[in-house]
Length: 282
Image 1 (tube, rainbow, N blue to C red):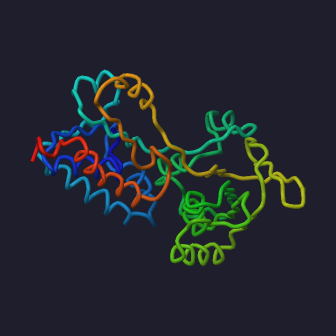
Image 2: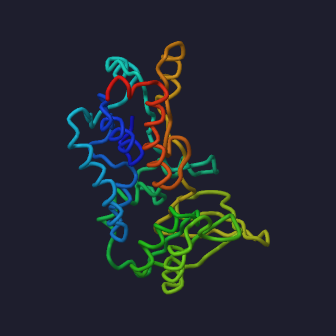
Image 3: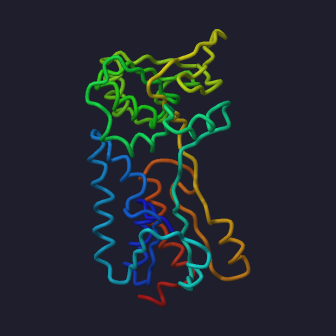
């Protein structure tokens, strides 16, 4: 279930050792979040890897791909699986901050998630001079937003609760990112906490306790990603007294780097070996 990089790797690996494999994806495209992020112009090369996995999958005659398909319990039962791989990925983390969910749900809201930005990426003007962009979260997701808007001359500010911005990002990427932030005068507000989301402003608390409304034309809440498992518990209940093992991989366990999810997808061969399925199919 799930055709992001982790799910694609698991499906290809299983099919390549002879297993009849079914790959279920609720969207009409494969590649998961990697495909989505590659829509950002400066991230377009990221699509090279899911494209490789997709080409690999499409060549396997014993790998059946279902797109635009919800992986319901009944649908999966009809496939009579011996092993279920849960690779349903992640979704934006939206904690219960005052006003956040109410404002984002409004029609014509000015507050967005990273996926909202990606889905609208072709509609932003090339020149955003005079527009204010405030980004809550200085991790990889928030920096992707800053790297998109800052070169378009928007007045950008990043709000990060931690003492530093870009924590966990590899050193090479960090150098390039901070060069861009400094070049375009992106304000970096560290040790600063989001208290409330308003229609046109984020109420934040600075390290000295001072409160400030940061007004924006575009506000982004980029507090990372969280695992998304819409059918996992129902499947566990359905197969709890059977020999069918359910294995979760990739961002469905916790959001992290693509390489780690792909490694777990490749390691599905260890599960197949444990159950002696390779003796059956090879």
